[in-house]
Length: 222
Image (cartoon, rainbow, N blue to C red; front, side, top):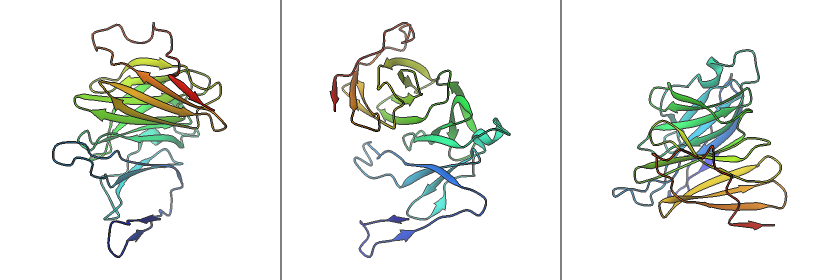
């Protein structure tokens, strides 16, 4: 159920599918360019227990592209339910998805439902994702149980740029924000702790973050 409070009368839209069960949902990031500064994005993505991904427009109640097979095409016979989603900036036109059955993260085109790129988040599947972009840079934050959080530069081919020393247990929610050429990352452990990280920009020509020690939190709320 969605309610658009900006409309004078308000609008409610509901959606269901006779053969799909939904496991995760996310909004797209707000537009932030010279033509749409600060304007809201009306896209949202739905992850399905079947491993498929759908992207919809909340105002029209219409799909923005075909249903993507996503993990349904690569994890047949396993628990391929979508575990996490992160919509990229509107101009990128894609959504990142992770599933319970595989350690890969998929970037899926919204217009055609095709998988653009697949890369491993770690040895185990990612359970949380967050995406953000500013200027020429696009970033993704991934969280896998039992390992450091990872910040990826996704402007071109996804490259791991930093590791973050997060909570001892799996993060229950994460978020990402551009700041001064770098990124701010936030994660919570589902109990009493929230970690905030400040990650400076890392040049694409540098070796990358695999050889670096994980960043510790700039401050911790508990």
